[in-house]
Length: 169
Image (cartoon, rainbow, N blue to C red; front, side, top):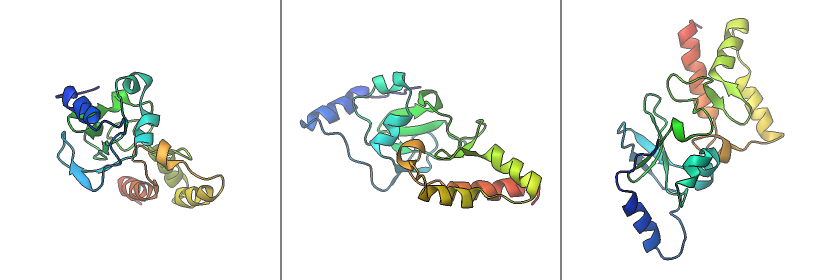
């Protein structure tokens, strides 16, 4: 769902640049307008690749967005007063609370559910080793497949810890 508090100011800002060049990837972290937690900048190609066709059609530029990874926050991406949520995404954002499947590795299809099943059946998981091996061959596409635009290893490691705690390992 788009939440435009001041769509005109965004359009004016882009037009005022006069060069049809969009905003570069944001540096540093800023507070999410929904949850007030720090969010990091994401590449425009990440946003463009993961939005629905309808959401894409409403944007002139995909650059300048931040990614909110707070699990309890409904916001996925934001820029100025514009907020994009799960409804605007062509994929399920696995780190958001209550979603299924809860994907942690978009390149090689590892979900929290798959990791939990492996942990329950064997007491261990090969997820990190599998991802690291596949990063070499065939390679990963984190910049366009992962909503954060970055490598999933940190989030996957955190998911393993959380799942182990939940199931008592």
